[in-house]
Image (tube, rainbow over the protein chains, first blue to last red):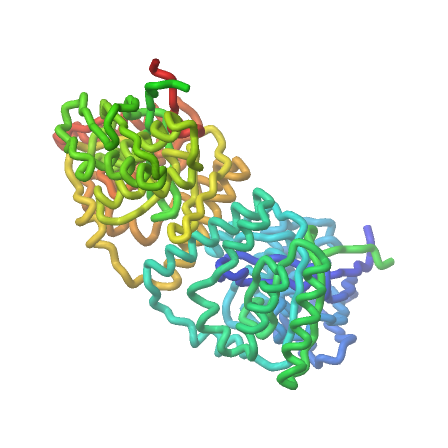
Length: 309
Length: 309
């Protein structure tokens, strides 16, 4: 068994348009790079190799919180050293905290000889999400660990379903503003109209059927959110324009990634995804807001683990 | 081409638990029997061969309303004689009016040499539903015409998706009481909580994934309705008991068929479906309410058309 493991833990997109709170997917880029190895004393040591100045106290670090939950379940005294080289910018809305939490426990599990199931790992990693946002949610954690598009049908009890997915290209733009998750949450209406909810569940049913059947047109028609996006998108400059132009260029559809500020668009081919990327950059250039853009694909395998020594 | 066509038009179950207003399925029994043939004068003549005393004026009969919509679109003077031998009791909640409307236009289309698509037929038949209930809904019409489990993602514009479906046995009980559709509709809450809606769309996503993947356990776990059933089921005597005992006997799950009073339960095998049927009968016997019960299977082909001469 390896004594040191290298971890590639991917970015993820939660709240997949009509799949608010229940659908998320993993992408191939960007991904965090981490190393996990045993250390002599029980407990957790965290070393940050990036410039984000995240806490190294395991109780204050999302990866630490996840590892502590794993150690509690493992019930034998073990010590880990976790080295984090974060590539996914915190607060960008593409699952930066989930990549840390999920990657850490997936690596630790491999080091220990895989005593835990993927579902166990999701449970441990949700402690990191709780530390980051106050809520144990799994819609970034689950796709990070399972790969592909995952449905979290229920969190209590945990019920994760990995969906089939045809080839899809993903364009992501991260305008360099901050949207606080707490703000994105507080502006949501807690009461909604039944008729709007019916539209939303017609769309999520269409999206799941489209993914399972590999029907791109159906995926596109179903990528519509009548409930959350109209409220949350006002926190993201030029959101409507990004969406309109992306669809004019041939994107199937898309929306807010997580609670923003990143926006994602799905396309059937790379050419469209790149045209969308260019247009996104131009839109933010024109208003003088800098942004990062990516073109990537759906990561169907989730976290990648390699022997480091 | 045949000059007279025999039609078997199946019963359907709308509002498939978490799929309120958007999911429905067709069953193999019961089905209405109809005959359609040309008549000399343009227009529609309806002959009832059953004991239900439904109107024969085409403007007042759901099949007539559907045929009139078809004739308007056909735009050449044609006359049809439609003979109806209804087997699906009106008001039972298993798509009796949809079977008449959909069967009539499917038969007429075959007689005319199939100038219309299935989607056209759904549009025509919805005029029958409008006459019956005041609303153009397609969640009985669509499965009747397409067969299997259908998703009506949207009515305006019409978007119907036929889902894959594993072998399923269906037990239906029709307690002999009347639930007026208007009552079933008026007691629905128009405002709901976002958190309940999220649960509902997690379940419908799980149900669609379960059907597409042939995962019976997932189908069972997803057959949960936190929004409509708690309100509507109070109109159906012994509903909770029927559901509880059916699931104890091994049924995957089920709920109200349409707006009731019929209740349906899905099972993986015939033995379970028959045990459920027996228990349902005993429950209504014990409270002195007569009922009809059926054990049938999902009808994957929809309306069946045969040459009658």
